[in-house]
Image (cartoon, rainbow, N blue to C red; front, side):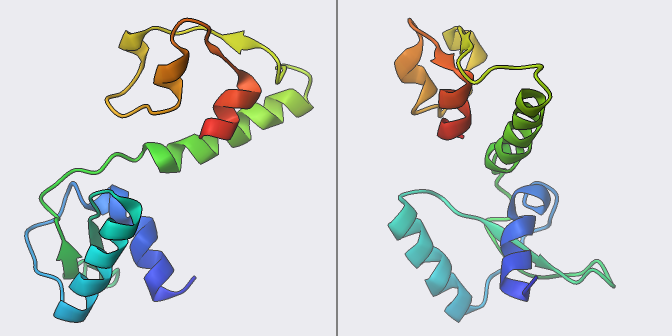
Length: 124
C-alpha cells in the first residue's frame, strides 16, 4: 500500500481524534481539487505510525462518517450469507426515515417501497 493510499485509508478513523495541524500547500491544493471534483467536504491525516506524531492533516477537527468504509464490509458479509443460503438477493427490506442517516441519497427515495438486498448492496 502506498503512502498516498494509506493516507486515504486513515481519513475517517483518525480525523475525529487528531489535533489541529495544517496541510502542506501542495497537498492542500490537491485536497481542494478533490473536494471540487467530488462535490463534498474532505479531510485527512498523515500519521507517523512509529512515533504517533501527526505529520500533516486537513480539517482534523471535523468528524467524517465512516459509513462508506463500513458498507463495503457489510455487503461482503451479506454476500457471504447469500453464498451460504442464509440470505436472498431478492428479499425486500422495508425501513423508515428514522432508520436513515442524514445523507442517504439512494435509500431515501425508497421509503415507501423499500429496497431489495441486491439494491442495497449496489447502493453501497
